[in-house]
Image (cartoon, rainbow, N blue to C red):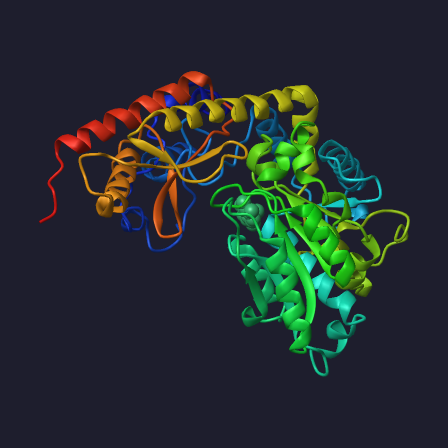
Length: 466
Ligand SMILES: *Cc1c(COP(=O)(O)O)cnc(C)c1O
């Protein structure tokens, strides 16, 4: 099986990056009940190759340019093999002391690498969604003097949470899961760079106070999902400080870029947040899942999540970090090992070089788009994402949304590359993200040439709408 894994990476470029499987195609081939008798490994593996693999989209493929990447690496893969081999459940220090202490040190390394001050403490969460939920729950508990935990919402004010109109849906989810209510998530308009308008934020808070609401938290995004826009963290920090509001930063994707000293000035103000999350599992070559969550005030986090049944009492409590108290789940995988492996295998410089290359190559593509009258850049590039569209002169602008949809479908059906889309102010927008571990500049060139060729092919079959 390990040989197969090595071959898979050797040959991955020849596989279709996006699965073309039709809905239900696998279900129709799977037995409706579990087998009564044991089956041979060779039979199971043959089915893996024949049934499962064709239905997989290859997230480690160098020409995967869709969404945001979940870029792994060989050191991370090897560490995951060790983690699975040990099969430990690392809920508390006692159930695997090394896992807890390695996690503590890895979070310190990461904190220093992204430029958060030394008084922040971190914990690995499964995803940014969970971290943001933990953040809003902590904000809620702190604001209520830990009353909601024990008494529910009776007698509490109506809390309000603020995020930009381009914030990730995990913010909406955290707001309703925490009982604050979707109606109390205030979406702040964005400016022409798709970043939160800080003046509009201040005005919304003022209006809410006048109306009797209690402003609770602002969630700023460093690298939005649609365009990697950067909310103005410094201005938002000023507002939160003045208004005494919790300040959470969702840097799920963009956080990895903070490993580059030249990017860090863009995040000025982050050193004043209450909590911060970024996903090494997106752009730092650490396998999914691994989300780094940092807080300024560890005690508030623990007070929000702590619960101590008799069967979890230990003699080491208080001297060590029991990470079960640092978030929602009790059980925890040993995730720190893959971070340790990646950081040591590449070194900080090796990781920085990858991220720097990705950004530089994206800059090149941005220039190709700007220089080509058949295309239009639709959002400022901040990192390694370009938002653009095809603007073919042979069709009226009213048909460009349709044509870009057709272009996307045609590109993705090819299996050669995979990209995704968003809508910006009603404009159908193509997104190309260059963040794969195995990406080389030749893949970037191949992809762009393939897009040009596909556009020409679509032009030759174009039929004007009557
Ligand atoms: C990817 C992403 C998320 C969600 O991340 P999960 O770890 O999958 O929960 C949240 N916010 C932003 C800005 C993202 O890019």
